Length: 580
Image 1 (cartoon, helix red, strand yellow):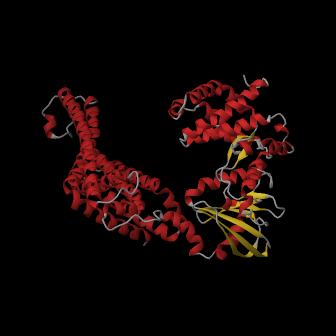
Image 2 (cartoon, rainbow, N blue to C red; image 1 turned 60 degrees about the vertical axis):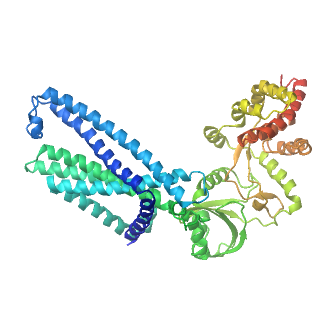
Image 3 (cartoon, rainbow, N blue to C red; image 1 turned 135 degrees about the vertical axis):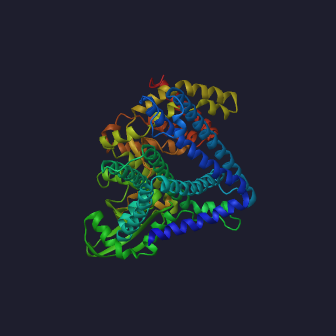
């Protein structure tokens, strides 16, 4: 069965990694396992003894079901000693956790030292340490679980049987449900952690209910054994929960861990199997088999057949685009975009924007709808009928696309949602770190300019805040450009759209910046709210947006070099009484 196969595959891999750790850092790993068990036992006792203290405080004397050694003491001294023991066990727990942390780091250092490889990625020390810790926790959990089941089998066999039976039943039930339903397996892939936690919690409740039911049925119930059984059950199920959770965290990273732990394993170029699955829709499942149902779900249009006719280079990893020819009902050409699992947010953003606007409001192909292809978001468009822009046209087309977005007035509800989710340009400018900009200043003149910019920034932010907002698309790459049948240029990628004041995103070199008023006039023909926007303000927005972008990329020298252009236009506005 699929679950047994997965468990077997994980155990085989985990054992091979444990052998490698033992061969390189056996003493360190042994100490980690031992002190993990000590930590678990100390934590168990630290939470068990307060229960006894409460029972003692609420009793007239020492209850008869307490251990015989406790019966020799008076109640008050016993309460004090148990309180001291509780503190002692908790301190032992903290010390054991610290020892585990120290020797986990030492084992990770020895593993990395003996593999003798170059640094593969930035957080590799953290990955190795985390792997050592989780594998040690799993070994400790197996030891602890074996001892706990053995102890429960002696003091309360019924509880031991219920725990083992519940774990076995949960595994068999999950395996059978996965075999019967692919949808359940897909759901489990996304929610495995929550599912394991729920199963663990249900197991604890079942054990508790069993003890209560036995009491209600009139069977003799040793109170002390019942309390110990409940606490052991909780810890045991938590350890089982933790072991499965550790497996979920480690197994997807096995390629990285293999490359770090094993000398003859190299870091694969394709390290994420989840990302490969989106390509499996095209390489292992012929698109003609699932495209008709996809088109029906997204557009409501019936097609007997649908064939991929042309591939598009998107320039973005795991965003796949291609043309589709539908026949037998819908006789249309479509553009289909498929988003990998790591591009889900881009798919949601794109659908939110294009679904909020009328067709043709933005320079984008007509958006027909969205649907899921398996687990992956898919968007359907009308296929752009024109030829893509020539290489010599790209610079002009980018200006066309940027200015074309200014002509679209964003809907009020979309503006409010964006404001609640993102900072606008004026807010970001107000948070500029001038101490960092000072580090990039190379002359007294630049220092004076930076001080003047800082002094005027508040007023500049107010000016920027009065400029109407427009959609900005930062992904105007040549691969994503196309033309409609009427020659209008469009862009295919809208997953990273922003909402910025008109002028943002316009090139800041002097020649192109001086052309901005011409494009602004074209936008005014479509938007009444742009009538009061001065060209100088839009140019200031372009410069300030670029400064904000440069600061965000820590290109402080380039940002400082743009400040004179801002001050120049600020002085022009000041001469007209616009900015003091």
